[in-house]
Each structure stands twice: as C-alpha cells, then as structure tokens.
Image 1 (tube, helix red, strand yellow):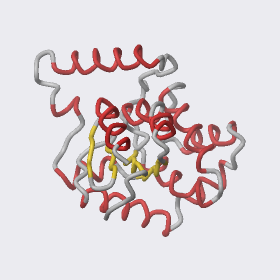
Image 2 (tube, rainbow, N blue to C red):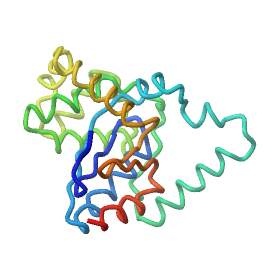
Image 3 (cartoon, rainbow, N blue to C red):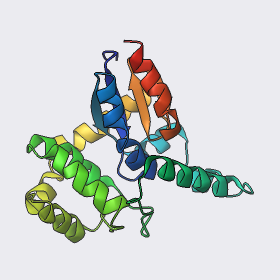
Length: 204
C-alpha cells in the first residue's frame, strides 16, 4: 500500500514509551513540512508475535550495558526536547488491548484526539494502570469523554476486527516494532529516526 509523500503513517500502540515521546514531536515535524499524520492503531504484541520480535528488556536484558545505554538515550531525548512530563509507567508492561480497541472506537465516536491525549497522559505522565477497566473509564470521564460508552465500544466486533486488520497490514508493510513511520513506501523505525522522517517529507 502506498500513501502520499505528504502523509506520515504512524504505527502506534500506547504500550510503547517511545511512541509517546515520538508523538510529542511528530505533529510539529509534519506541520513544518506541510504534511499530515495518520495514526494507525496496532497491537504491539501482535506485531511481536508475527515477526518473532521481543521487547528490548527481554531481547537485550542479558547484554551488559545495553539497557543502561537505552535509558541514557531516552534521558537525553527527553532533555533535548523538554519532555519533562514523561514518567515511566510503574505498571509496565501494561496490556494495551483495551486501550487500542478504544483508539479504534474513539474516532468513530468523534473523540479520537481527546482520547489519544487523555490515554497518553494517563499512561506516560500519570503512571496509571490503564488495562484496568475501572481506571480506563475514570480517565476517560475525567477528560470529558463518555467512559462507559467507550468501554462498551471496545467490545464491538467491528472495532476488534479493525485493530487486527491494522496490525496485519502493518506487518505486511515491514513493521516489526513501534514506533514505526511510513512516508510513502519508505519505512523508519524508532524515535531517533524522526529527523530522517522530516528529511523524507522535505523531499516533497
């Protein structure tokens, strides 16, 4: 599948701290280049299963110094971009199935942007356990959304099917982790590639 050169497809799951950090920069990058961002909700667990990938703490946990360096790079990124609200979620890893189904349902209900911001804040600023349905509803309500309606919508078969389809399509395009970005047919992985994403957009 080919998208226009002036669109960034953002393969996204709330469970990735780097997806949060990327989202804090990506809209401004797109605006500078006259581009738009298409956020595509996918299940990171499904991507891992389909590709044989693993979370960094599992894949690299046994390598001396590797995870320490990963955390150092994250601290540098946060400092460089002033993302001081970020807090590593104490409940990590959080099962994001409910959250991601909600990210499918919310735009259908006309509240996609508000839902995205509320759940990103809850996950990576407030450190909440958002795989708990009660917490999910409370956070949605606090953001002025209908938490109960959103929770109900996560059980809609069409919502479930769309999330699965998104995930399968992302893997078919070459996605193996999150955050992944596509500009046209060009793939970029990781928050450290955002400069390359902008350079690709600048080509027009």
